[in-house]
Image (cartoon, rainbow, N blue to C red):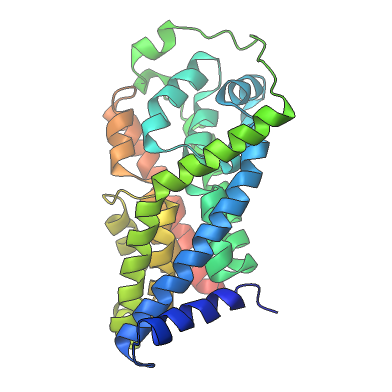
Length: 322
């Protein structure tokens, strides 16, 4: 039984009975899509973010820093990428996280693995991909994102680019052995509730905008129009999607509903997921923020390595999911 069937019934009732929109029209398709996806995504977000927040209460940034500071470079890259799944941070957190990690003795490559994984593969992305595409696509995306984060961090670590970090970053050393206060069960529950509400308050405009654009595409763009220019047979589709995604500022909550609509209209899965990865992991605003703590050459190197990984993943998805 489809657990979201009641939501579909409710969306149908609102669309056809309350709003009196004629069935099988372009407007009906767009409105029905918007109502159903909005309800489903917000319910999934509220439930799973709360659960993940309980886990996150055991992993504050200070504890993550302490864990990674004592890992060897390869283990550190893997652990940093895995921790990025349950500790999503936005672009505004890039500088304090970068400073805190490096100053605590976390290797530069390990730090970059976390910076790649955190915005690209987190619980919001997992929830939305699961709800819109199912487990197969969600797990493939998470796995490929982890590989990109780990490999990118290892390559940057191998290149020994510490000289490309602004000197002031290394002038302060953080004591990673400082003990952290523990939380009671009630405090963890309150933290999870507050964090869930805070995340929902931050992402709801992105979700509605993303679903709104997706609903318009779903209802009004001809099925074969986008497939004609961005189908799996178009070699330029993946790199073009990555280039388009870089200057856009959004998060998983805003871009995944759009990805869902593009896929429905015939755009290949690898191309749409490459677009999503570039929006979340190669954010131009984040690069502008990081410019304060690292030199342009390092930012371009970071963007190039991650970009190549995303393009390769897009082509691989298109090949596997034909």
